[in-house]
Length: 418
Image 1 (tube, one colour):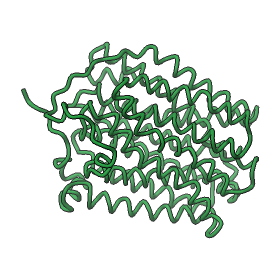
Image 2: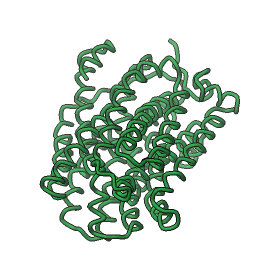
Image 3: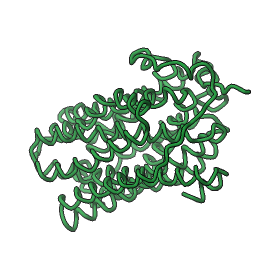
Image 4: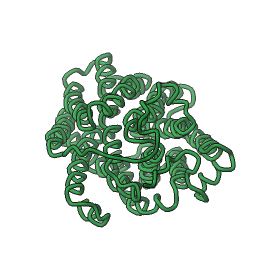
């Protein structure tokens, strides 16, 4: 990580600060990811109802939805590290509650509380990186710093799966808590840097009201893209390990997440260098297609290696969409509103996760677990069409932006030259 940042010719104090932020994010996402391959299986030992499993997994988004707006404002008002610490504290406490209180109603409650951790941490982390990254290579720095996600997805599920296999679920939850504690302690090494920017008259404006911001064309389509990605991610997280059991796949579900992590890691390095020059649109389009391909492969899968290929495609999709959306939001916002807008925009992702668990869980009773992955594949195609036709002010401009023949000329905030 240090060598990657050094190649960007950043000042040593800023490089050191970004490294501390990166390690904090790595501990957080390792904590969250350590529970991905095993939590649905743990819930399945407590209830045989897939509706209840889906409800518990999907309730994670309740905390996200309830707190995104407030925590977005809080990170602009109290500072990025303040809300990062809130997220890490929640991520430290809740896994222990999973182990201590194995009751369905309580698990729904604690799962919803767990969602607050991402609402607090993810937006403040992204906003802090966007604040610090020089505009000329913003995409590159955001791409490098977003590597915490695939690395966390590699470390977390591998270690969490090992803890579960050798020592049971309780050890898994303790490890998840210790990851978050380590990140919380590391936040003391993050130095607050005052960011001065010149991007025009929007700097002096207060953030708009909720619906005014949420329905703004520069935000609305990004929310829609994240809604589709959230449904895809939520469906995979809640039902892919169960589908593997139904198809009698002997491979540990953690291998899927490790495949996704490795491919996500590998794609972000070249992506980080290209999105500043090629524009954001083409990468978002390709990322949505990769998500759709991953879901289609799961639907058709019958062998272990099919799930490995699907994990690779899912990792590429996440590795492209997530950092590119963050960079695109940074292009379309100023620091005064950035935390708030980031929080609101990611509500689309939250709603997708919230819908995926209970709705897809209900659909399993009608069409079966396997067919919900075909349905979600179709949703990805709908999301791609929406982005290709509505991401800019006209269909023509949107299509050009989506295929990479033009940049975000309609909505990107132009720096003021002095």
